[in-house]
Length: 332
Image (cartoon, rainbow, N blue to C red; front, top):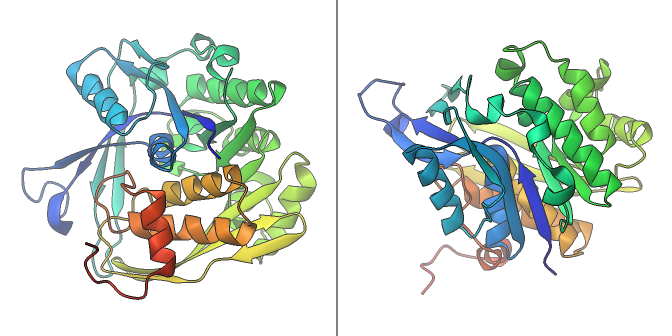
């Protein structure tokens, strides 16, 4: 079963120091197109769904390259506005051994940040959609995007479109303007059908600590009656390049866990959460069982850790193969 998913968020260029070097250790950077919602859109397109990106970019060669890249992955780009401004950037220094990865944002004044909320015609943009996917990164970028995100989820609910919301709290971004992060995130959660959050996100929104994830899930189910699913991951970090990952999917009367995925020799963990989100959405759209859904999503996230760049370059067959494989022989 396929569906149409609208993803709303900023499209970025990622500038990465190569080979685990420190930023500007050598005067060269690798460039990738990225952005949380775009990562989800691309995975869903590769899983056989119709995914449409809603965003705003300038009229220049960099933005043209971003749009071309999305189209090459079968993401619909006709709803990307083209306005004055610049493409947002972020700089990645990939960690190694016990040194964590670090991200530096350069997004101020981007076309997306400066586009007024009223510019987006949400009744039309969501006219044929089954799902709207949005993350907490979007409202964190500024007042315009925050207002647009809230208008999007309100319209989605009014039109019977399910809302997928990924908490993705980014303190660096919220500090750049005077928005009330917890209040805005709470309203987005109020409209969500599916939320990607854990006990730390719930603590942020409610201002209360939860010693166990199950307690936090119970609290959000009680507070937000529209919410049907809460998904999250449990990540054990042995080192910067060796993690163990388990998926978790909760509904009001049950919790499911995936088998643990051991991930030594990580190539790139950025976008792993987005790969997981797309996997959960695929399972729900396909009406798979909760167990199959969380297993598929965790396997999709595991594959992303082997792929450089923000996108998860994989398909349903590869993900399902990982769930059943007994060896790592070359597939011929």
